[in-house]
Each structure stands twice: as C-alpha cells, then as structure tokens.
Image (cartoon, rainbow, N blue to C red; front, side):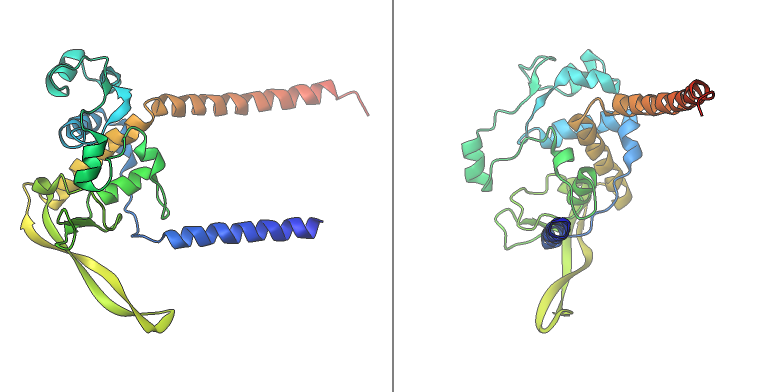
Length: 256
C-alpha cells in the first residue's frame, strides 16, 4: 500500500511538472519589490492606473477612499484621480459595456483589483508578470489592434503606454528544434526601436514599476500590516519557545 501511495505521488508530481512546462512563455523580469512600500511610487502608480487603465478595466473591489492609506488626501483623490459624478467612497468601476467591449476587443477587459495576485507563473510572481507584460508590447501588423505581446501572444489589448515607451518591433530567428532537428522554431532575439517615445527606456521601466507597485498594493492593501504582524508573531513565538523550554526543564528537574 505504501509503495502504491508513493508511486501515486510521483505520478501526480510528474503531471504537475508537465503542466508547468507546457505553460511555456517568455522568462519574466524581476519586479523591484521595494516599490510597494514607497509612498511616492504608489501615488504615481495610482495616477497612472486611473489615467491609462481605468478607462476600460475596472477595479470594482476597491474604493477610491482606500487610497488614503498611501498618503493621499480626500481632496487630492477627488481632484486628481476621480471622474465627474464619482464620490470618494465609490468603487473604482467603469461604464464600459462588457458586450460592446467584447465586440471591439474580442474579449471583455478583466477586472484588475487582484490581477497582481492571480497572474503568476514561469518562475515569477504576479507582479513580475505584469512588470514584464507592460514592457514587452511590440508592433505586429497581423493582429487586429496592430500590437502583440511577448508574454501574452495574440493579446487583444492594445499598448496603452506606447506614447511613453515608443514603438518597438520584436526580432525572431528561425532555428532548428534542439529536441527534433527535423523541425524549426521561432526564437525571440530581442527588440528593435521603431519610433522613440517621450521617455527613455530607463524612465519607462521606472514608470511601469510604479504602476505595477500600485496594482500589487491594490490586490492586498493590508499586506504591509500583515508582514509587520507576521514578524511580531514570529518574535513572540521565539521568545515563548525559550520560556516554555526553561519552564519544562524546571518542572521535570526532580523527575527521574
């Protein structure tokens, strides 16, 4: 029986690794995680999110007044981050009709409230995925929108930050498949700049990092408090373990 259980576990692990390998996709760049605790980065990310993402994508599980937690005042939220007719306590929803969106883009834009927690894979976190995704759009005349993405091939979403980044083209080379020399495959070699944007590559990377930092924070606004509480709990358990060990030794010292 034990042998059967062991073989079953090995089989399950084999299936799991096969699924992960089948996922494929481009390698993910590391998101600078320190941005999530940087208030200036989060505030800039909130501005970018409202101006570039909230037109089509909703964050319908997040309220505007939650951004008080990242150092913004109600007046700043109302003046800089809200559309006409909204109240500071309203949810970050959009008026885009999902049916029309599906007709225009081929798919309704997903809600982005927790996308930073759900998009993970290829050895990276959801923030790594978003950070790489937003920087790897390239021109592709074969698609409806004229854009494609290295991380999400045939994506329906156009490149909303193209004016900042500029336009780039992906360079692919045809090479023989190392596992089957009779077949060939397209291998990504890099990007080439078609037209420059208003930002340098370094500035654009910083901008995307701020946007992803806000999306990471939005997916779990209490994460900073959770981490601090976790450290406190671990310290408490460490001290309590020492106390319990000494009490146990004192209680049983006369027992042989």
